Amino acid sequence: MSTSTGFVVAIPARYASTRLPGKPLQLLGGEPMVLHVARRALAAGADEVWVATDDARVRDALAGTAVQVAMTSPDHPSGTDRLAECAALAGWDDTRVVVNLQGDEPFAPVSGIRAVAALASQPGVDLATLCAPVEDVETLLDPNAVKVVRGAHGDALYFSRAPVPWPRDAFARSRDVMPDGDWWRHIGIYGYRVGFLKAFAAMPPGRLEQIEMLEQLRVLEAGHRVAVGIAAEPFPPGVDTPDDLARADAHLAAGG
Image 1 (tube, rainbow, N blue to C red):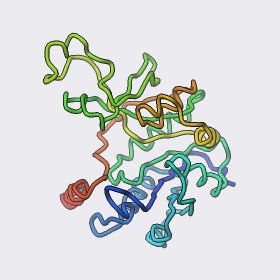
Image 2 (cartoon, rainbow, N blue to C red; image 1 turned 30 degrees about the horizontal axis):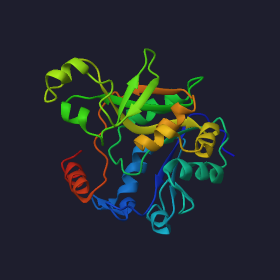
Image 3 (spheres, rainbow, N blue to C red; image 1 turned 90 degrees about the horizontal axis):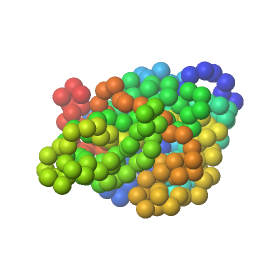
Image 4 (spheres, helix red, strand yellow; image 1 turned 90 degrees about the vertical axis):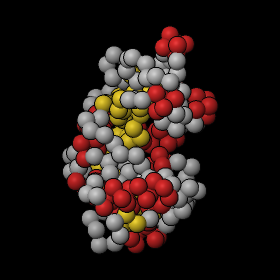
């Protein structure tokens, strides 16, 4: 059982993907994408880096690296469920801090990984995550860009695909201009202690979660505290489609 201090990073890496089949093994700079993600976690100073996958091809691609692999069920409905099984297989204590780094984030900044781990380590925090300013009205109105409303102390009040809070007067005049004020885009990196990860995975889907199709709303609706830090540097877009993959490969070739 792991007893060291600091944090671990677990990367859910399901092989099947509707928009990008075999996503974890798609090549960036000639190497599997999952390896690029794992290197970010290692560079952040994680005590351990695990990849939780359902496919032996992903495990084999990581052979000979410092990354550990948990072979998990192919039937998990979400990355959270996959990581809960990973935690059991790894034998982590309930107090261990785990960062859930998505397997399609090959350029996740080291500072962001460390920041969410530090937030999750704070007393009273159940779930930790990050956000960044919304800088254009197209993003504010884009349902694929999840927005978060933060309270005065930085805790989440709500997550939505809608532009919340709704700028009533500004949008009454025009929806083509970015309104004055602060709007925040949610960044999908999470941190929690293992005990809460297990509890999260055991919760039934919430009503709000099912409306917005946002798993993090399950935590808020159940009355838990979600701390939201502001990312110190940008998180480049993740890789979801073949076009995203081509852009990521070009970014890497350009020294990104």
